[in-house]
Length: 182
Length: 424
Image (tube, rainbow over the protein chains, first blue to last red):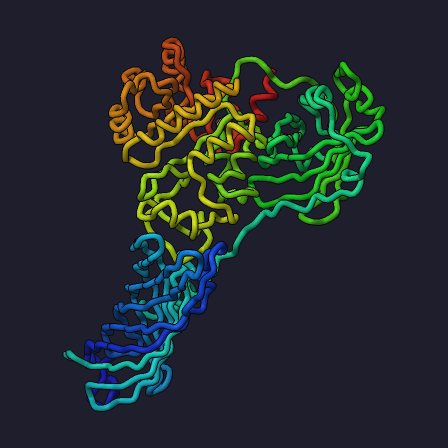
């Protein structure tokens, strides 16, 4: 079933396909137990800036699919012992995302994928080390259309890297741009 | 429609990604009677006389028809604690209890555990004066069939013991052809929910209670070249408590690991030096297999091996320490060591490689089978053959009863001990 210009599907013809890019930024709050070392005094910081880049294919039906990446600092902590230092845990997600509108302006997003996690340690020398964790994301957004191609959205998102037990919630402002349609 | 199913799948993943954590905490074994002022340590001759094969006359449905009783010890300075282990074949169960003499009876207090699941519980037994204690406490105990009856209760979890268990002495343990019972990962795996983390100091001390006569230690090098015990190539939540640090363990210095990383049960990652010090001073283990988990220089491992062999000799301790060579890379590094053909080693490659480096031990994987002809050939050259890592009960029995290996490396040393000591 395809849609005509008013969005009503016409028998035997497909509707308009489009590619949309989402770019956003905001703050993330780390929800899981950060698990700092038990033998040293430390001060944890759970709130960090975060950014998202997402490309979605909008077909002529409700369910949409795309890919998402971005960057987020899950958490960090300062070591305040006889020797001071700090640890930063950063993640770059790569996720397959499915999306559906719940109402005209509210969309939900969810999908599986993985997280490239980097820990940066500055304590008795510097160490930067990486690992990969499988995980998922789920998000909900409210979008205000600025014109036919551009929309502005507010999004709340949960990121879960379950092998490393990292979970964060973020609030982001996003810009959606329909950059291709056919 | 396919996209819709994918969406439901994703939501299901989100819901089910919270995995249940399994645990088998050691129960609280406080027993006022056992800790009463009148209860005294058991004499040496009583302990030794108790060892043997026992028939399970009550409780066989839980622990099997027969069990093996063996003593071991952990020394802490001038204090030595003796533990009586009970090895069962059913569900890879074992008991570890301490013994005391109270009046003319013997009390045994501890806990049991099954390694096929997370079942555990308190165990409290006694041997009455007329059930063998009088004989066991005599200066020269004479023990015969049915002369010792150990009776008591076992519980589940932290519950008070309420299930009956009776063990009746049948015969002595097998003392024929020697077998090295080697415990993997210093005693047992973290994934088996042992009381201590794998490759920890606590686990090394515990290994004897699991029936081990020797241990395998996984050796890696830190960024600054310190040999440490750690199995996996990365810091991960299977082995360590969460601390934000990830990636290859070789990326970190020893100071960083020692300050910031705790193993899953809270212990620090031990250095190889600390591990060998523990083997030498705290246990009666007499074989250490250093499994080389890195492909850097073996010089630091070799130096520690030589130092602790020398210390053991000076103490009059029977202790063997071999450098394990699992692959071609480690073999090449081993050949870079001066006088490598006189360094004790365990080579997992071919018998020809074993001859080439004059290894003391040939160590093939168990999946290659009994290999009786090759084993005999290696033994004819004055070497020994150890098989790894054998965990399947039927195969453990087969290798012990039909094979000629001098040692078995297992994640379940208590099961190897059972099948070995029940031999007739």
